[in-house]
Length: 305
Image 1 (cartoon, rainbow, N blue to C red):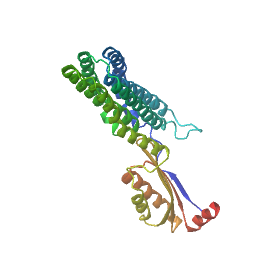
Image 2: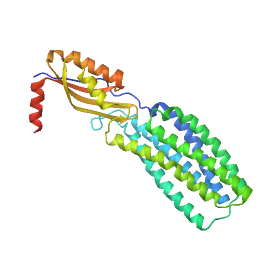
Image 3: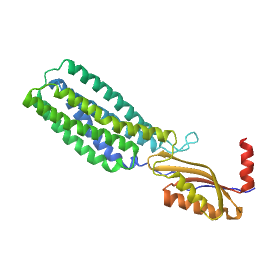
Image 4: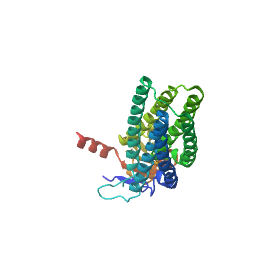
């Protein structure tokens, strides 16, 4: 019995993150030197909020470096041992970023608790100066990464880190102003804890997205019920089975399925129609579709028993 089987398109030559590599390099070049400035500033002023911001900046630098490392791996060609190449490195990088950021937030919250018990002396004026410079650096980095954040999970992770750091800089500015004009030292650990708490929901979302991809879950932009209905509506198709849709990495979705047809002579037309629907209606460019008739489907079912 004859069956039709096709790969609609070859793997794309570049991932979504790869198209924004220059922005990542520029953001990393801004993050590394200012991270050192914030560490020195936190030691000088005694500010936990500034230390929290410096820690987030450290995570920014690490996340950007991981993103670039992942992109370099993703650009490597596929091999017999890794038939998809190394594009999944971007998802692993985003997962690492999320885990590190959650651990870092835990530390900041613990340190804030310690400072509530024993508030240290804070130098407000230099703390304010460092925070203002940090705000400018983060705004520039956000501008650089904004376009890529909507296309790549990897760049999105880096963007979230810079976003949290920007808000952290605003928090440090507020804390510094309060300390300068009121002398109230608890403003610093309160703001520091707030910086840590703010990023948790966004980091959790990023973590879930990365895990969802690694578990080969259905992409959120694909309605699997609608997709199956579109396939069944193709002339000559009587059933769909073994339907799977998953994300290889950001911007690269894949699908595989078996289509049961009434007449194998229609295999070519059905295959072309199904491939076109996947590309044009669901933006799935890597589709593997097997065409079979009812006897072949029954034979496959017996083999699975």
